[in-house]
Length: 418
Ligand code: EPZ
Image (cartoon, rainbow, N blue to C red; front, side, top):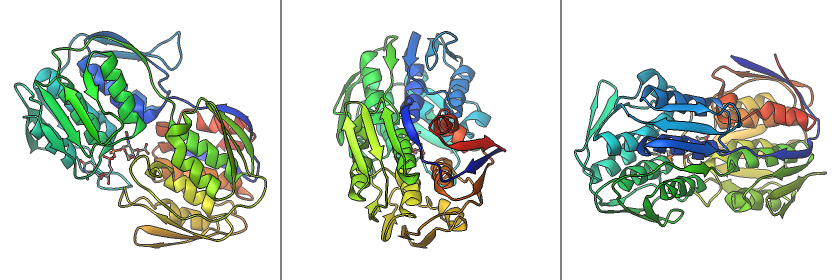
């Protein structure tokens, strides 16, 4: 159990560097299963979800470890791969399911626990499975495991009913070593998908169209070891921006690819908060009130669902009423009851939160249900008058962010482990 005591109403000021992207690190580390030999992956954030995927790789027979000499670098030695992923690790983190495509491509047989749902939704993997079956895999569900078999994967035309990020990544990885050409229609366009494609291309894969809704892959015989550095974390960058805004602060956020957080920047500007871009630095300053804004989460390049809870916290202090609609996950408003306890005036109507801005939030004991809800509550605590006790039973914040509390405290926040 992680408990944080936040003394609020302190503006965040100064400069902060964004870490590497969690949601690029996880699929790229999974993809090293397909790359024999020694690879080096840089700018990997040091957080619990990455530690979990490293433990999954080790359980599959791959040597993987954070470098002792270079922080945020992971060294991989891949000389043999088992086909069964460890139950207790995969069920601990949904993203471990990313290993199914690579193991199937390398071994012709993959036995992976069916990932459980989580607080934000049932999180099925039917689109992943449909894609792998299109490539010629036979997939069965037995005793809580997904068992996929394919003597040889063959390229195919695949179409996704929903542009699933994970399914796009699974199929793109499997197709990289399949025989012939694969096209993925209605593919996810997220920057993390592009980063995975760039990693695979550097290892010798033939992939075109990553970042568009149509990805084409021509399978190759084998891939070769690479040194690769992953993109910065656009959701951490957006979370830091919202933290500056909600505390009426003045922040320089460095190491950002502004294009990746275009929607977040535009929505903040729409509220009247000053956001400027200077190369890889985003400057954000909020020295007085700001307007309400309606938002609907959408697949990239739309407003990211992973920024919805944080934006809802900010809008709870806006002048006016905002409507926040969640179209990606079916249950991503678990932060609302907790925000209400802090004085927010929000009611849920279907998949839309009606947020009536209030003058201030007041500190209260709150509970973290999922990663981005935890970030939203931390932001609310930073802005609130008085003390907020945040109870994070499952260590969500440490799973998804690298040293977030330390970064906030270095900018003037007062957060202590309770
Ligand atoms: C990735 O999850 C991210 N995780 C999520 O970030 C992010 O919220 C999500 O993409 C959307 O951007 C990682 O990259 C590790 P999806 P993923 O498949 O791949 C449904 C965070 O906070 N769906 O695009 O699981 C699904 O239920 C996390 O960092 C199916 O129905 O997301 C959801 O409603 C949270 N069948 C929607 O699609 C499937 O086979 C989007 O899911 C797959 C997905």
